[in-house]
Amino acid sequence: MSVPRPSTQHQQVIEQSWTRCRGWGLEHHSTPRFEPLHGPALSEWLARHQGLLQLSLPLVQASLDSRQGRGDCLVRLADHQARVLSSWGHLRGIGAADGFDPGACWAEQGAGTNAIGTALASGLAVHIDHDQHFLKANRFMSGSAAPVFDAARQLVGVLDVSSDSYLPPAHTLGLVRMLSQSIENRLIVERHGATCSQLVFNSGSNNLDSQWAGLLMFDDQGRVLAANRRADHLLGLDPVGVAIDTLFKTSLAALLLQPPRQPFALQALARNRFQCLLERPAPAAQPSPRQHDNSLLARQMAQAGRLLEKNIPLLIQGETGVGKEYFVKALHRASSRAKGPLVAVNCAAIPAELVESELFGYERGAFTGAHQKGNVGLIRKADQGLLFLDEIGDMPLALQARLLRVLQERAIQPLGSGDPIGVDIRVVCASHQNLRALVAQGRFREDLYYRINGLSLVLPPLREREDKREVIEQMWQSCREPQQTAPIPQAIMALLMNHPWPGNLRQLHNVMQVALAMAEERPLAREDLPGDFLEEPLQAEQPVPPMASSEDLEALLQAYDGNISQVARQLGLSRNTVYKRLRERITREA
Image 1 (cartoon, helix red, strand yellow):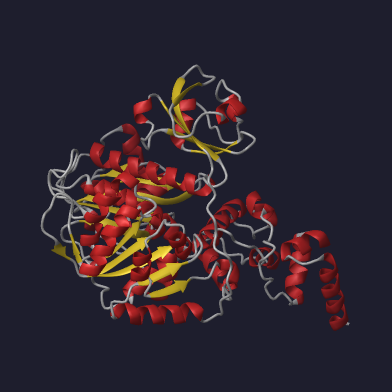
Image 2: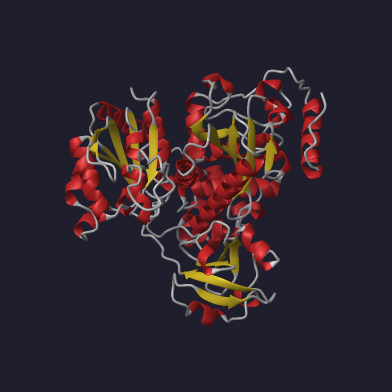
């Protein structure tokens, strides 16, 4: 059978993929090998990627809702190794064993030429038509996929849109490109938004809210720390590391005088004139640290499971990145509602003007611009299952009153409808904010607070977890390439163990990805770790982990070339204390 030849570049991508498949010993009649993860391995793997999932969910869901009635299509998000993280939408005739569940791997080695695996292998957005799949078992569908890159332009995943009908490639390719760019923009803002100023620019003021607008994040000195790929195209160069006043005909001081979120014009040095929006950083407050013992997570999961079965609402609190969504997913899988839907809603990620219609739904013609078939809303989509309201502290006060009525009456009234509709849901809420403090400030309803706070759980930050070493090793296992077999050196493990980890699991994932990418096949070294990681000091109030093993102390001394001051700073101890421990070690060894 010959390979279809739609265009030269596309033809080359398909031909190269088919050549790789033959090199791996695949034949057209081979059975796909998806090598799915199960049980604890699946749960731990999903926890490591919960940040990417949390960012992606509202963007994908909003896109699918706007495309109702355009035929069957399945949107899948996979990690950088082609393993499926989550899927939205549906295809006819697929089952649990067909590789569409979370944990299934679509790398070309096992699944042949396919949109997810081939997009990762080529680094390009690709469309794979029915007959262009190398394995005949996959030819019931066509699909388009685009790689997703993070703020450091590291490959973190791939977004795929598959269909069992004949949707035109322009439709699916356009969709995955749009969604992948939206996710990349969110990753950039999440990584740098708390400390950097944000400049959005485009050719006109009417498309500044588009995902295709250029995006720059720059520090107080005007140095660009991150940019999306659209910014490269508009400016004609990669602006990362470049001073903002060398990109535009303006000084940093004049730029920072521009009023936030109001359009203004800037002239680029390449003579292009852009419309711009400026956003200044707004750091979020973090909860104070708390102590947790080794069995706390297991006890919390058991308690939460019992109360969920009795329809008692749960409130999960903890710092950003600790794995709140992973905890809820594990809770859902272990509950009697595991076969029902789990609908996760990030209240902070949905634009304020869309929260009401997205949550409660609307009838046809309820307002100008409403979809002709209406929208059932995310709460009704959770019927017979679990509704997870993340960052509920960001929900507008007016909508808090409507949510309270839903929880009290177990019925919902969509916009434009006169009749309430019953819903059977279990509710779990989460926030990194102190909701009790928000109540005192008048920013959160007290009656809603007590309605959702049947049991309050606080998930421990990474720096306080007793199983931190195991978590680090698991993260290394998930991020490394097959050929990276050298274990984490003792000196590097000491650095990782004694780090404050303000970004928790999400930050650990990013640090490990960068370090492994820099090290390639040699053991990790200190110079492989990101600069901002090495510059983060221990917080003064952070409890010092037990360090007492001579091996740990020796590892830190090696990592810092014997510099006692740096070792003391990393451990949050005085230099005298470090000297004392060294003397104790020498005495014991003598």
